[in-house]
Image 1: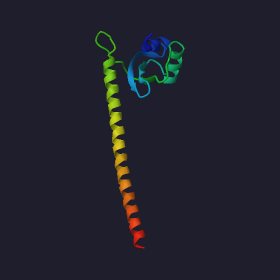
Image 2: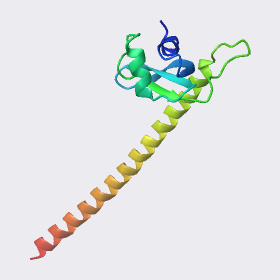
Image 3: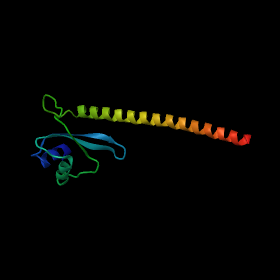
Length: 129
């Protein structure tokens, strides 16, 4: 059974619609992420608990609540729209991490240069004594 179908079947009173895509994961390669439109209030933990009793739920699944699921005029779920959005989010996160790493490396180089200069200065003073 498809995870999105399972979510709707497991918690039909709370879920109006659902779609699932694969998202990148460092450990597993890919994990499922559900996009859920709610009819009534529910939490991700409540949904996962209900689904766990009806489907083989693996660790690492994600749930995001959305206002609507993108669909074609015939009603087919446009998973590509969600996948493209997730890829953009992932790409931006990677860029941000690289930006932080670049700053950290610059600080590290500056710190090492400063420490090397201080050590050299200290050695020079010791030799003059």
